[in-house]
Image 1: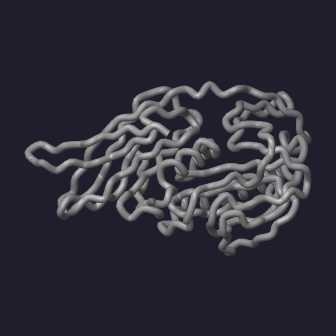
Image 2: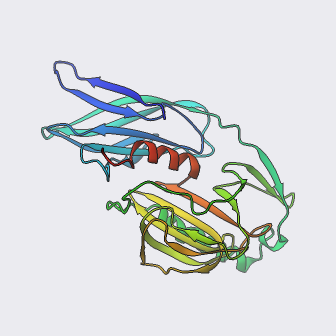
Image 3: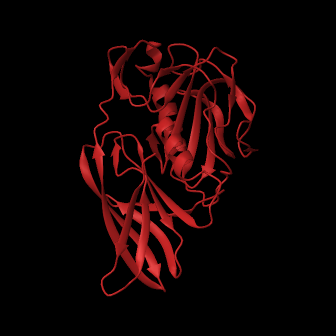
Length: 288
């Protein structure tokens, strides 16, 4: 992973703010990362991008560093984004800005055929789906300051990827959406591993995603496992990376058995494989 180093100087001062930008150019649907070095008399607070506020967290594996994740919305157009960094220097409130570039990922398109009852919904199903969406968003919008992450992320299973993140989708020639995760080929009953340590915040059957497990890893990071046939965990349980959380299946809106694996950062769906590579290479590395 290429790192961009930025030293921000202040007029009339020899103080410099040391920031690492993991990806100064990032595509829509992916994640940008800033890393801050611990400095004497500096207290990092948060950053603002497009009027949205993101927290700056301590690196869970390195006491000398802090970091912030910026999820880029799937529908974001190519543009230069201003990042406003807020911090205190010797109790004095300060800020500094920098820019990064959003580019078009040029995602592919695909057409799928599914049970029509999952596309043309009855009133009852609409109400259920709406309630489940609101429940999930309430979870994703919650930020746990504690980090459960003690090592790098892994994928929940080793298998062929059948559909990547971001593909524009048309269901039964009617419903248009995009793929918010990565699909792995998995016959029903395949064991699924927790991608990292965390707390189970949802384990239930849902209309679209079928058997669903969501893990809170802390710092606004959630991993999602959909279309499952069996749960080995319940809400409130704390799991370790690699624990078997359940079995794959074909529940919900699907064309066949598989695992849909997703990542949410600050409530946004992001490319899970790009996120894992980004955070593993820059944040979740133990110091030598």
